[in-house]
Each structure stands twice: as C-alpha cells, then as structure tokens.
Length: 168
Ligand SMILES: *[C@@H]1O[C@H](CO)[C@@H](O)[C@H](O)[C@H]1NC(C)=O
Ligand SMILES: *[C@@H]1O[C@H](CO)[C@@H](O)[C@H](O)[C@H]1NC(C)=O
Ligand SMILES: *[C@@H]1O[C@H](CO)[C@@H](O)[C@H](O)[C@H]1NC(C)=O
Ligand SMILES: *[C@@H]1O[C@H](CO)[C@@H](O)[C@H](O)[C@H]1NC(C)=O
Ligand SMILES: *[C@@H]1O[C@H](CO)[C@@H](O)[C@H](O)[C@H]1NC(C)=O
Ligand SMILES: *[C@@H]1O[C@H](CO)[C@@H](O)[C@H](O)[C@H]1NC(C)=O
Image (spheres, rainbow, N blue to C red):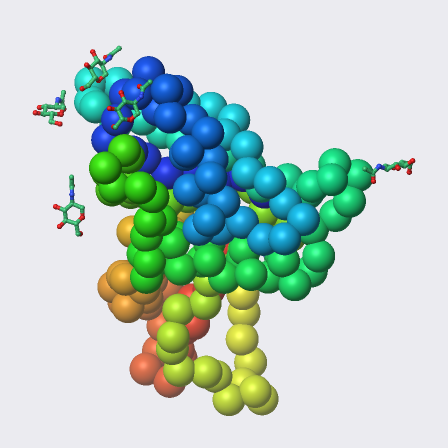
C-alpha cells in the first residue's frame, strides 16, 4: 500500500465539491502508469481552515501491480516532497498551496540519508536505533545539531565520529 497525506487551506465541503479535480491533480503530480489515486479521508484540522488530505496510490487494473520502476519514481517524488525540495502543485485557484506532506505507508519504507562524511570502511562502529517523534523534515535540516547533542550525551572521544540515517 502507498498512503500519504498533506494539508490544504480549504474546508472539507469545498474539497468534497471538487474531489474529482483534486484526484486528477494529485495523479498529475505523483501518479505513474498502471496506478490510480484515491482520496481516502478528508480530515478537518481543529480550529483552523485547513484539511488534512489522506490519499493512496493503488495499482490499476486492480489485480495488477505497480512496476518497480513506478515505485521508484513515486519514492523519489515522495522523498523530495517530504524534505521540502518540492511541493505538490495543485490547481491554485481551487486548492491554494499544499503543505506538510507526509508518507504514511510505503512498501519497504523510505530511508533518507543526509549528506555527511563517510566512515573509512575498516573502522569499528556500533549502531544505535531510536525514534524521534517529529516529522522527518523537522529533523532533516538539523542533523548536525542532533549529532552534537548525541556526542555530548554519549561522551565520545575526539577520535570517535558519528553518522546519522533517517527512516520514515
Ligand atoms: C467552507 O468555506 C466556504 C468558503 O470559505 C464557506 O462559504 C463555507 O461556509 C465553509 N463551510 C463550512 C462547513 O465551514
Ligand atoms: C470548488 O472550488 C471552487 C474554487 O475554490 C469553489 O468556488 C467551489 O465552491 C468548489 N465547489 C464546491 C462544490 O464546493
Ligand atoms: C480562515 O481563512 C481566512 C482567509 O482564507 C482567514 O481570514 C481566517 O482567519 C481563517 N480562519 C481561521 C480560524 O484560521
Ligand atoms: C484479474 O485476475 C483474474 C484472475 O487472475 C483474471 O481472470 C482477470 O481477467 C483479471 N482482471 C483484470 C482486469 O486483469
Ligand atoms: C502560495 O505560495 C506562494 C509561493 O510560495 C506564495 O507566494 C503565496 O502567497 C501562497 N499563497 C497562499 C494563499 O498562501
Ligand atoms: C530500527 O528500528 C526500527 C523500528 O523498530 C526497525 O524497523 C529497523 O529495522 C531498525 N533498524 C536497524 C538498523 O536496526
């Protein structure tokens, strides 16, 4: 299953009234051959004009599968939306700007590796694994700060380094 979400500054009834256009617009941005887009949920964000749109990309026809090429195209467009290198361009007059793109489900997950110095292959290293309760775009630009804090927390020596990977 491929499921993702984003926000629009429109209320649920406005979006419902233009749902088929919304579906076409999403498909134009992230669709691939042999797939269709389905909007699963329009969820109003309490106390605001914003609505969270949850959509899936499913194979079409139903009992086919999305090719691995198709999956990798979707993966790379999702990655650039999540780290905010790009935004979903929907019909502006109807939907305004989108924001807060998040991936909720993707086969095998998506891992984003921030640019950083590689370790020499022969060095000893230990892997730690933990979860931060933030969307990835909030962590993405601040891996240096995160590493500084962890170096202090782990009491690393000056000859010890650290590398961070982030997975959705
Ligand atoms: C939705 O927004 C439109 C346009 O701003 C407004 O006319 C309408 O009353 C709103 N509907 C609801 C249910 O808030
Ligand atoms: C569709 O979107 C337009 C532009 O935002 C809006 O004026 C219209 O009311 C919407 N349609 C429905 C049925 O809500
Ligand atoms: C809803 O949007 C309008 C403009 O589109 C803005 O004037 C108003 O303050 C917004 N209301 C809330 C609760 O955010
Ligand atoms: C779906 O699969 C069934 C059985 O495998 C097959 O008979 C049918 O033609 C397929 N339908 C489509 C639309 O490919
Ligand atoms: C949408 O985004 C553009 C470019 O980032 C900005 O200039 C514009 O003011 C935004 N429109 C709304 C309604 O937020
Ligand atoms: C890190 O933890 C997640 C969630 O428990 C798990 O899915 C993932 O495989 C782990 N990664 C490593 C490198 O251990």
